[in-house]
Image (cartoon, rainbow over the protein chains, first blue to last red):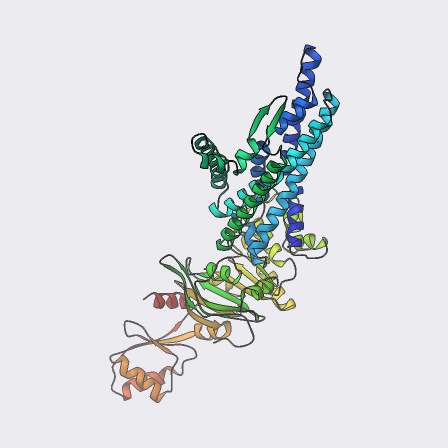
Length: 256
Length: 308
């Protein structure tokens, strides 16, 4: 399994996809900071060019990295059923479970690389270009990131599993959107009418990472309280475990 | 009948896809050190057989041993001693030939980066090392597949129609490479093809598959004996005549075709002894001819009989 993981790192970091995705994420967050800075510089009266606004904005979009985890998962899977590269690994005696788990591990590391580069670039450029509103907002962003990491891992495990369930890249993406985005959306809507649905929605990953309420001067996220933070982590871990089980069952049954 | 120590042995190996039987109670034995030609028409079950041995497909029933391994974990361990090309070679399209091989070298824990260039050189792809897989011709892809199969010095090669897409010079080159590997490194090679002539100058043993069934396993030596000259006899009473063949001439190596023609294979005795036998027993002799049987004809007869 160690050798398989090493080879996957070699592949992932010798092809462009991870760098392209990381570069695109970095460019977007840098552009955002540059835009705020430019507005303040050229208009003179622009109250949002602060680290408070910049960091809170990113913290309010934690569902975007969840969606990006699916993109990263796709990079890791690399459509290997179509290219039949998995056949070579199985023919060499690697177990299907080892292959699946290695993909998830490599995906986590690649996503962590993307996250660290993007967030470091964002926070660094924020401090360079915006008015410093205090460390509390940086801490809040980092806390939000930490709360959502298990959910993002679950998102990645989900796309990898769904690839082996459906056998195609496009079908896996569609089913991921259905399971991870559409279902929580519908359940949240129903939650406005039914208490049971509201409770269920509060455990669904997409709803959890995109839930924001305004409280005075602060935005309140699902992870703002200690209990909410733990709930986010627990939901992510449960989601990851469920999708890993699904993935292992699917890949065990797969014939190439 | 094939003798010697077996690398692969299957017992009643069966694979069913829905209602279709891809493999039907297959018993095959691949001897150590042989070049085993697995011959069958398209859809005969050759690829399914190889895929089961390599763990890509699960058998529906039956069992097999790979060396001495007879269960999942041991199969997986012994698969590390194999190299294979099944169907079209699978590689990452955006990686170069060298990167693809390096990826699998790392995955297989094979020490020494120089192994990649060695194998590319061995299969004639040294100049294409930096070419992306997606830009390669079919023949180059096939060669890269062979380079992968040879990576890690395998003891058993399983090759599914490996010369597909190669030009005539490439076919000769790869064939001599495989023969050299078999001769010098004692690598057992199981090679499938639907064209018998591709294997004619190479295989030491043959297994013929038709519609998922083994119709014959035979050594190349015995096959060549059978394929030389044969006699074709037509008599008025074929049943009585064949009984006499066995009783008087102690002959068992014959076949009676559906139209009653008797075919005596192998090294038939003098023609006169067969005509004399008919005349002495009062059986009308309608025709007696000495004929040549080529490997392709033999195979065609074999498959036609199996399909009847």
